[in-house]
Amino acid sequence: MIVLGIDPGTAATGYGVVCEEREPRGSLSLIECGVIRTAPRDPLSVRLRGLYEEVCALIERHHPEVLSIEDVFYAKNVRTTVVLGHARGVMLLAAEQRAVAIYEYPPAEIKKTVVGAGAATKEQVQFMVARLLRLKTAPQPSDAADGVAAALAHLLTARVPRFERTR
Amino acid sequence: MIVLGIDPGTAATGYGVVCEEREPRGSLSLIECGVIRTAPRDPLSVRLRGLYEEVCALIERHHPEVLSIEDVFYAKNVRTTVVLGHARGVMLLAAEQRAVAIYEYPPAEIKKTVVGAGAATKEQVQFMVARLLRLKTAPQPSDAADGVAAALAHLLTARVPRFERTR
Image 1 (cartoon, rainbow over the protein chains, first blue to last red):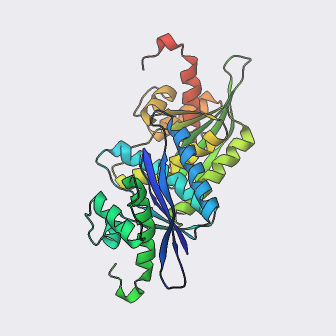
Image 2 (cartoon, chains in turn yellow, blue):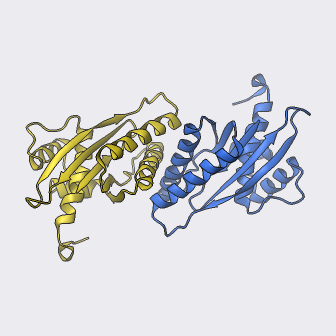
Image 3 (cartoon, rainbow over the protein chains, first blue to last red):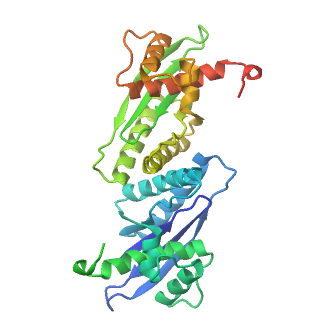
């Protein structure tokens, strides 16, 4: 099971590709992580095209079964929230066109699942991501770790039997 | 000069394709207009894919030089604004991928240019769209007329010499 996790941002979009081995049950490993950046001075449509092409390339490179993407963060600045909506739109399109199942998780739920606290700091997320994946150093920058955390949150949530869930 | 006008909506997206003849100068004619609808009960990603494919088909059918699209309307409901952002994202992508020049106009500016009043009613927009294009009846539903109005707004704005503009 391969999961592509994405933390969409207006300037930097973090991503992580995580693999869960069938045997031994639940062994998790990081395949790739990083940040997609677009130039803030470019027109929005050019930035959207760049984002779309990068996400398509990630899907074609790793063939994930699932896209686990952070739900919209309602920024105080409405304009930022709207631009984020545009960016998420092209990412959802890329996954939908390639028959990747889409799961959306609120930021606090991702942190709660990975760190144990919905209000965890960026450093705590980086620490737990490194620990769960047995990495020597935490993914840098923190946006990349947030992308990996989105992928981990889906895999860890899926492990909990349905009758134990409290959603 | 062919312009594709779009009034993006969460449930219904109006569009209009308008042609301006070079000779006689400025003769405007309606090529096509209508509404793209998506099923509200479908997942957002499925609806985005539908919208994207319809806009791509319109561009491939008419080869517009310009996409004139309504700027984001900041709805009172933030969720609606965010979904609208997702929808606009895939439309801007479709135009950018096909090298269609993109112009964005606020709703009030479109109404002011086409009707003469930024707070014009839907009926006034339908009336003026029909008059400017010499149509026997106004485009129905009003979303389609709003899409045509977006196309007309671009063509009429472009006619005003730059030094006369008050933007």
